[in-house]
View (cartoon, rainbow, N blue to C red):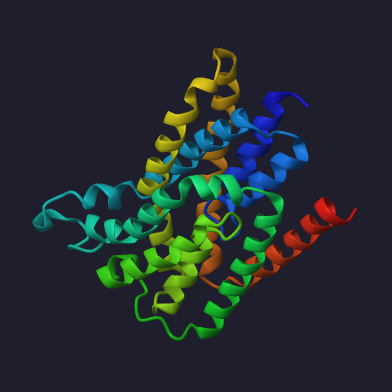
Length: 266
């Protein structure tokens, strides 16, 4: 299979899974293993195309991002979501991720650990749905700094590949009395600075492994990830208006079972 076709496939996987509670990292590890696209070059590619997914969130929520840095008197959201909320939501996982980055990359990036993460994340989402009561915070602009910080603590779970950053944060939001939509939107918004920092950090270390011939593949993956992520977010928010996370949890069980069979039993 050509590298450009691989770029399209993995770009679609990244865009579709980055903001759904099914783990984009886990899916890219599994798909990369299936396609034989592994190693340092694959790592650079997978990190770079996440920037396309990040761009889709910024475009969808550009008004909220801009409002965070305006004087409160002219804040179009009346002083709702602020940069402090975002900071509270990302500091915990950034701290732990920085300290454990090498160990995570060394020991947790394999099909077996992804399968564990898929199952554990699915159980967390089902428990969160069972525990969820009538939401007290229906809109992301009404959440508190305390809620943002606790959601950030739940996000630490996503450092285990397969667990899912959006799955852990949305589940955390449900435990904290947020609606599914509010929790999902906060998950998307805090993903932008978090993923941007993580991508830049990873790219700085491995960028020299690329050649000029690789940039076509990177560009294809970036554009495909951007388009599919944009569509995925819009669809997911509409889905959450009338549905729960249960279907995603069951999907994770199925993927984990099929992956275990393919990699370890056949």
